[in-house]
Structure formats: structure tokens, C-alpha cells
Image (cartoon, rainbow, N blue to C red; front, top):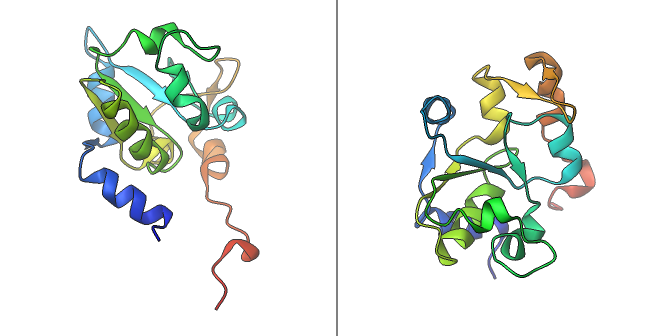
Length: 154
């Protein structure tokens, strides 16, 4: 039986990752990549990379393809465009990038360390209204919140 960490490790054999400073460089280029945030809408609204589009991981496949209620034209039409997939910590994004590669996306990478690492690198984040989110304000929003009952029993 595979666990979540096993699925991520398996996907990492096929998915390239970039670091926050790599993304900052790419976003400064004349033709920046599409930044796809696969977190849940509530997470996305709290703090996100400016210009990112949000497709929750659970809707990814149908959002990437034409002809579905969830189709996001900007994403479905980006099969040849560079895409950087992000999430909170860089794990969901690896799985999402793996699926996107299987669906024919030619240039998709995952942001290692996720939005949390982007914030640690002191790069700008915005909230749901587009207002800047201070680095210190974003930190607790992006922190892991594993409760005791969510840990493996001993």
C-alpha cells in the first residue's frame, strides 16, 4: 500500500522542481509562465502569488481539458506554455504537475517549498482583494496545522 509520501516520491521521478528564486526570475521575464495554484479556494484567498490562477487539486483534470463545467480556458489552452504549479508546501503541486504532464502539458514544473517557501524568500503575496500580504502576516496562514489526532498512533 502506498502512502501520500510514496506517491509524491514516485511523481518526483518525473516532475522537475524549481526554487522560489527561480520563479521570481521567470516572473520577471517578458513572457512569464502561468502560475497555477492548486490549493483550496480559502487558502488561495488568504495569501497567493499575484497573477496566479486557482484550480483546486480535486478539479485539476477537468479544468485542464476542454468541454467540462470546470474548464479554465487559460489553463486548457496552456499545453505549450510554461506552467509553474504551486501549493502551500510543494507536495500537492508535484502530484498536480505529474498529472498535467500525463495530460500533455509540455513545460510544467512544481514550486519546491510552495507558497510557504515563496513567503520565506520574502517574495510578494496578495490577498483575495489583491492587497499586499505582509510576510509576517502570511507566515501563520501558511504554517502546517497538524493536530494530535492527525498523527500516526504509536
